[in-house]
Amino acid sequence: MCRNLILIVASFLWLAPCGLQPKPDYVIDKKSPKGTYRVKVRLWEEKPSGSGDYTEHIKVQYFKGEEIIGTYENKNSDQYEDSFREGMQVVEWLDDNVLRMGRDRSMQPYNDELIVTNNTQENVKQFSVLYGKFEQLHLFDLPPRSQVTLYASPEFKPDHSSNYFLGYGGSTKSGRTFEGALQSKQRTSPSDGPLRFHIMIEEKDLR
Image (tube, one colour):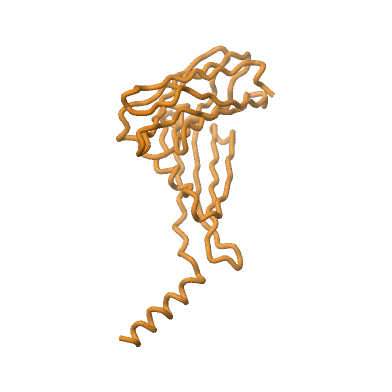
């Protein structure tokens, strides 16, 4: 009995400094329905020298044909933060120029409307909106003076509240950028129904 206990303790002490084993690389490479656009996601873990924990890395690239039209990179070494993998459970094209990345929302009762209006003279090359913690929508090539409606899940929480705040940003074909945020009345339960956000991209917003 004592011998077995010693072996267990010894095994624990040997494994503890090594930290957890890294998760396998997570790679997604998906073309839009008509093949106009493409998204490539790579998630991997590295163990910094002298550390017992792994740092998580993420790199997302957006393509139009062979041209890279956007890149996002980040890393997370806080073991108590949500993993990037949590926000990449689903990577799907909703239309040829609309991409969604986030958690599985199939059990949510409905979607909220995000009405995006390009009220400028420029083509919006890339537009991104973050709705809640794990819901991203990306829109590519929104023509001048045009409008599109995106649909995003409110993700109800255990206290029955849900998202009522979103942040957005993007760039035009000429390289000018914009960003902003919107807030709606806080919803306290599913019975409050869907919300509608009007996102206006104006000339004065371009930098």
